[in-house]
Image (cartoon, rainbow, N blue to C red; front, side, top):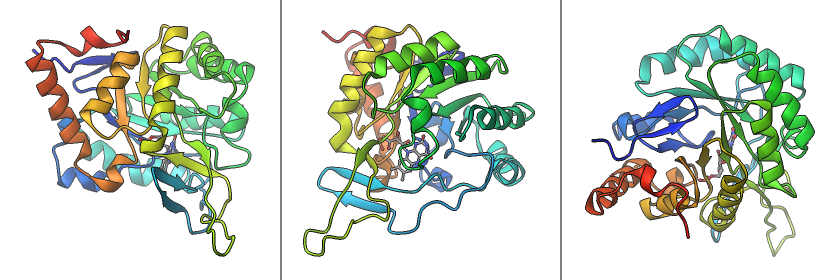
Length: 300
Ligand SMILES: Cc1cc2nc3c(=O)[nH]c(=O)nc-3n(C[C@H](O)[C@H](O)[C@H](O)COP(=O)(O)O)c2cc1C
């Protein structure tokens, strides 16, 4: 019996542990068996290539990480020609492709290109990246825009359609409900919070763009609260992320209503974090004669 089995909309996952977009190098699979993961999510791709922001792009804070990568990616065409064949050969777990766009039309054109390809189990629609002026946040902050985008994308695919939400909004539950009403089959939350750091001596920003994305252990309480808030507001499953490092962290999110979790910043301090988390979770469930589905959403 697999106590860790879970579902994310149309996807059946053997493990509830996945990786956060943009944080995981497939080279880590030389260190551990990929079957520890329920799915693999790519870095966000866009229609045109993006060079990303100038360095410095990462800064470690007292409790987490600031990043300003700026959605660096090779663009859809090069990704389809170069990255996808490699991932198809490598992966024995479901492949989730994260993508973003600067207009609804651009999102639709990326989806069109991906729909023609085999070997893709689902999509994570990034409407939440705070780093790039025109992309992401304008979509993710407005329920009407999210509803329209979800409706248009849902009409074009039968694959798992995950909407990844930003915490940098007034009411994340309203955005989540708009995504669900439009046809998203699950939600991922949260993307990075806004953050910044200044060198106290020189007054220089520590990162090239002064507002960047804050992730890691410092954002875990925020992510947990938002996960529960959204779980109370929607019926579709939640893939939770934000500061998760350990199996105990993961359990908190399952109690709060998540059906699966992702590790991101944790990989920077421990490339084996996912495999350790999965093992700890399995041991806890066995010792307490529980299955994951017994605890999802049962916080009291
Ligand atoms: C260096 C870095 C790059 C990221 N790139 C992306 C990205 O391309 N697309 C995306 O949706 N989220 C991206 N994220 C956000 C993560 O997927 C995740 O939502 C966030 O870091 C919170 O999880 P964590 O605290 O476990 O890292 C990135 C985060 C980091 C630290």
